Image 1 (tube, rainbow, N blue to C red):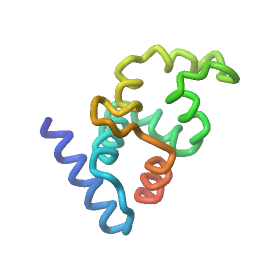
Image 2: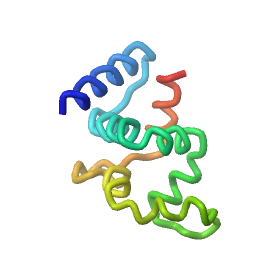
Image 3: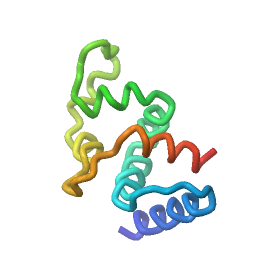
Amino acid sequence: MKRFVNSFSANRALAILSEVEIDLHQLALWTVLSSRWPSWADTFARKPELFEKVRKNDRSDLKEDIKHILEEEELQTVINGAGLGTPLDIDILTKSAKMQA
């Protein structure tokens, strides 16, 4: 929990310094995604179309080596909002990439 709070605070400071408006719920989800699955967070930020396929659980045109991501329930829970009612979207990925650039 301490690590999450520190990461969230750092991401919030980055958003403020970058002058990026981000919903706090989505920032929390982004913080979980980037902390727990950093390589997927980077991949999704670079390839938002892949993120949309994963979010919609769309297996078409997915390479065999990444289809396993659709079976990761924890990742799906975070991408779809984890009970917050606000799922992650392409906009948050773009803003997050902008914050870290």
